[in-house]
Length: 460
Image (cartoon, rainbow, N blue to C red; front, side):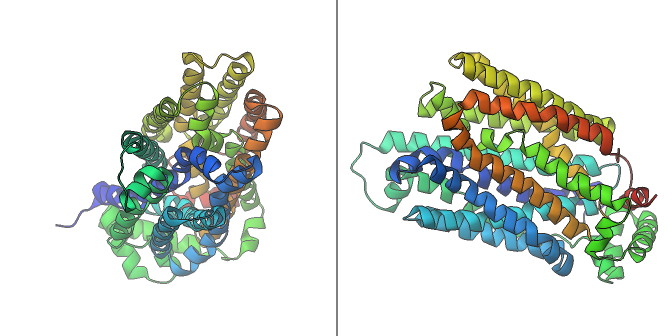
């Protein structure tokens, strides 16, 4: 029996969202390994930053070319390619013998992340009914948070396993990968979900809007019919064809009046969201808590708590984003993060890092980010562009996000050593109020509108 309607859409979005899971897992799993890598390879702060941000360089490369590739070859094929890159990266990280090889493997994984991060939310957006689009694209962010949490849990489990077996006389591959150099097991564990992602993708359809763009009308109608029913499929197909017929399909279209504002929003909003320091928190959470006075195990436990709240509060966005709207969610997100970052910075400056205040401040930070900016940014950038150039335009937006993430990740170790952790977080806090003002003045409300209606709004 074939699934139809919302059940069919949710199944497709679940599969595409698996790309978000791998995004979160791949980018956060390094947090448990970095202290081991710092000791084993005698990393300087600059090299540490490069090792951490090398995956983000791959993300930048992947995001830069994924738009062109997805517009030319389809959304589904690029997601399949991203799954293959995840598998290759996990193997490379597990067998790396030098920092250079490890960096190379991380870059390959980063390209996979860049592909998945750009294509998966766009794929979900193009398949989702307007009334559910915000929730379903937010599901992608939920998958990212679940991947982050699972990476923390996986690291904690492997660390505990290694601690219990370190005194034994065991040898062999398992001992080498899971005990003697446990970081290899941490970084290689991403191969398992990547294999599942590849298999699941073999059973999902192509985006109906891409199919219409390429002239595969009958196939697009079949997909739309399973999503919305026969009557709605005919109406939506007509709207998609009309909208696409009015588009030039060139990059120059992004510079047209109206659409130009969408381009500015798509570049600025993702970059500003990364200046909140979210990658610093996710990548360095265990190390931050260790520097605050915790042991390795308890630091990993604190990071896992943060990962758990990151996932839980994403449900708030899934529940409310189509009701509250995109704009209020983003404004309150930037404002709330400014307060959270201020509290974290003050805790480090005052030396109040041994009690629950610091952990509570981090949890508040994560709760705000997960329920606002985390999903909100992906929702906005996945729905504001015309169909013919949506892939390339989203490449620009996703590229901006990863450039911001790379900038923050690369500069954090250097700033940490020069001005101190507390002042780094105060610096992040300072950026949040101008970001909230940017959203208030320039970002329009798009809840409940079809992608074609949003496109016509820009043209007006």
